[in-house]
Image (cartoon, rainbow, N blue to C red; front, side, top):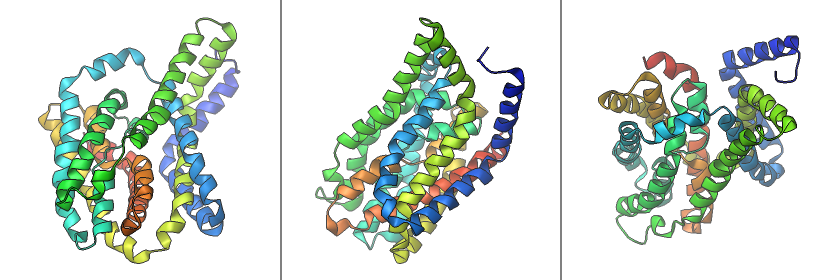
Length: 335
């Protein structure tokens, strides 16, 4: 049906099963390889950083090829899940983050960086991790425009409130990175996946290509995630190791956040009478932050806030390690 022999299909299925079974080890290997590359060839940083967005877009395209689009309308219209998701990200997360941020309140750059990255929910690769863990990732996809819009509106307000002044870094946050990230990382892969499916009905060659892509979308998930993780680490690790004192102060804070939020997401899901898949989605959404979007914001801030990019990058590295573990751990804990 998909243009390859039964024997080839069986071998591919075995490879996919093997990759999914060993995905934690594969992701950790990708993180380690990225760290080695970034530390040994730091001159490649700008090139590797530029490659993150297209690789992430390809990852999401592969994810969207497996989307049952007939379920998206139902997912978007699920007011109870949407409300729980907003409560997790815009009420529960600030309630957890603000007390944790007191640990770095003496340094404005550390405080602003912590708030900037932890108060912004992820709208891109959270869907990939949620899917790998067996969560309701199509509901997360359906809610991504709402999450993007709300965080663009409330993030400057949270930063200004936390800093206690309207001249805080939050006052200079622009909409453009959020809009660009949504268009490139969400809208473009989603539209391409829809066009691929529609083209399958108008041309036999396109149909064969579409069917082959749909058949291999699952097998592409783990390799593309490995490439994404390696690129992020390789491009950012030199900056992190340049200031170990800053990293040492914020790592405990980020680890504490990552340990607290899955339980919070699960609890809110139970209160909202959500099923196991939906509670997994809420847990992953609570943990995963929008670092790939806020990093450009951090880099654009003034020199007086020079620690912000290091804080954002450190959170990204901590989160990637945690998420690799959570893909296997949370499905066992959330019943």
